[in-house]
Image 1 (tube, one colour):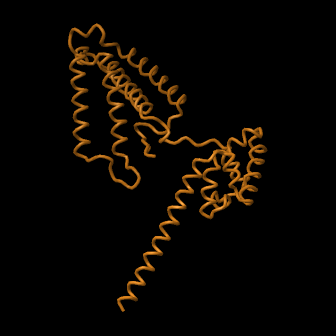
Image 2 (tube, one colour; image 1 turned 180 degrees about the vertical axis):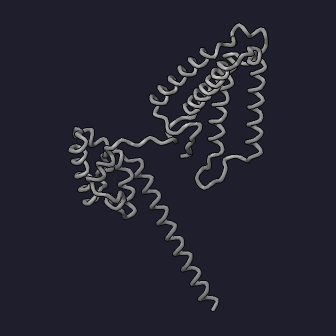
Image 3 (cartoon, helix red, strand yellow; image 1 turned 135 degrees about the vertical axis):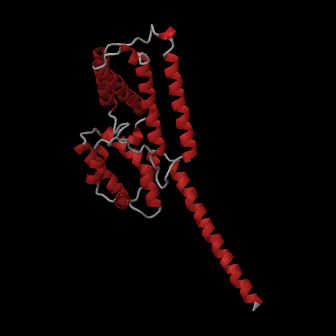
Length: 260
């Protein structure tokens, strides 16, 4: 009885070792494929995949009006994944789940820009600009109806711009922190988030106090309401050009998740 159990255990161990060897061999082959040149990869193609590649190249040349060299370069980028899939028993038609004609169209069409493609600094600048527009514009409108000039003594133009820009960048960062990543509710603990926000707000208040010092009035004048409104309009124009140039998606008031 004991001998039978030992024999069965030996057989199981042998099977496990054989499976492990096969797994290692497959992994080694995958690593080898990743190191191959495009010429070597083409030699590895099965007849079915070679035909798929041939037709794909023709479609790229026809649909994309590419030269033979350009089409080959596009295909060379696909060869590693095609050969890897082939090694695991999946032909290119099954791997891409589309015909060469459809795959060519997919390769040719420009990739749609997503929020994940846009760096944080561009969103921060956009947020800063729109908040400057709001701060300067609102105080400009209020100044038009304000009879007591002393009531606006602490709001020079440099103060409005600095606080507006700071608030815009702050809210942009806040949006990035609270937007959920894939499969997660929050990226950081709420305690740290609140502490960070309080620290930044205190920093803005300190900046407002610093800019309100009499010694800085020369560079921080209180402008008439009309001047503030003109500046707000100019900044809005700059923001419009900035967003158009960088093709921004969403804004500080309509944030989109940037998690890749």
